[in-house]
Amino acid sequence: MKIFIDTANIDHIKEVNSWGILSGVTTNPTLCAREGREFRSAVKKICEMVKGPVSAEAVSMDRQGIVEEARELSKIAENIVVKVPMMVEGLAATKVLSQEGIKVNMTLVFSANQALLAAQVGAAYVSSFIGRLDDAGNDGMSILADIVAAYDNYDIETEIIAASIRHPMHVTQAALLGADIATVPYDVLKAMVKHPLTDRGIERFLEDWNKLKKATR
Ligand code: E4P
Image (cartoon, rainbow, N blue to C red; front, side, top):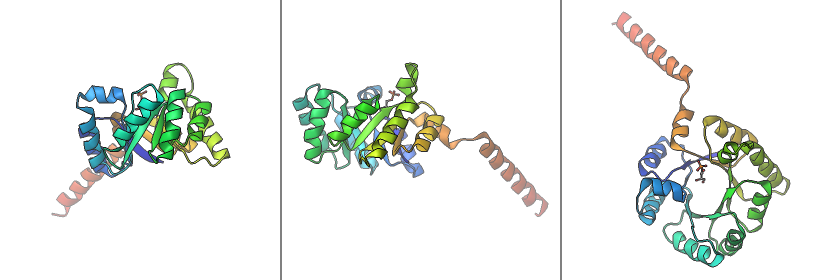
């Protein structure tokens, strides 16, 4: 499973990219607003930093507006993927864009049926929002499982992104279900690196190594 970072924070992207684990970036209007930077230049910078796909969201609500916005966004860099919300206008726009070779990440997907529709119009990616379903008292992971199973039945090529990740267990579960990608917030990525036994193990090895050095000096 590929790991994307779900943020528009340039410093966080830079840091995690330096770990060597990053395959792409997803942003959304809320994440961009949080950073308070000019949208286009921030996205351009992210595209220069990370070689993999970088999702930037179109905010028009009608098909023509989405198509025009997506064409503009795709000029920013070769690795731009346009995020389009799941709705009738979004589906119609995605059909046009996929035929033009512009990659779409169909976002705000909360059911297997929505994911099936995204695949019909040629979306390159579908973002299954797990945490928001959990927040609403539903089981986000079971929807992701349905999407993976339905896509497997028909060898659908649209890549499934486990999105709206809240904690490290979401990442493990998404991988066990066979999601293609997990897009993970910075704090959750940092938590994934850590294990108390690893920290204790490193401390112990260093203590013992220093003891050995003292004893053999
Ligand atoms: C996905 O691409 C979205 O940006 C993101 O995962 C939304 O997550 P949230 O529910 O934490 O806002």
